[in-house]
Image: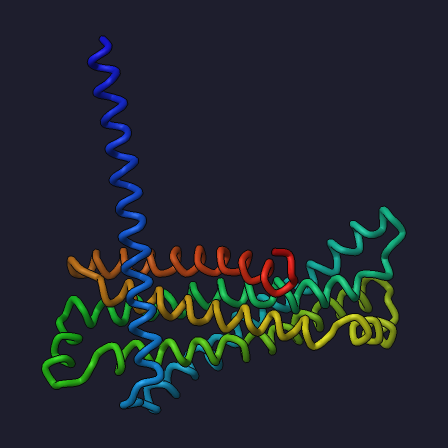
Length: 267
């Protein structure tokens, strides 16, 4: 009996150890891939056409879904803030709370999550299909670095485009809060705008834009990594797409906590 229990314990420890080794191996592989991609962003040759195409995908074609998300988020936030502050007779703070919440937190995070679901999956599927059909190998035989041609423009485009997207989303989100506050909750329109302008500073927007740049970088790195490492045909491409979205979401939420602590001097 004691031998059986010892066997179970040792088997459990072996499984835990194998899981930890796999986790750290995955983190190491992603870190090396990110470093290689970052290096190639700044090293010639450059491919401006690929960069422009990817920037359009990230910004222009992602704008409708991010804009709608920001609009309804601002509207819901105004309603929830009003019903909560009404208990403490602090309804006048709704404009400030809506603006600060969207600019600092909800705008960057929700935009990042929406873009990760759209562009992270698209990059993983596209590059994964190229990997399993050996198109990436064919690019290498033409003496073109696949990391420079396929990964670096996507990383740069995501890092630049997502802050611009978040800036537009912030404005749309505050507009959504304004529409609900003025149209449904009885706030005075000019007073709402005055309170927003008085309490919202450039630092609030700047912190959100820094977060957005990091989120965009994470989305591109995760999407490209899982696409580049896809195997086993169509099933492998599907797994790579799912893994890219999940990895991007985890990276966004984890980095959001760290950046919030650093930017606002909590640590």
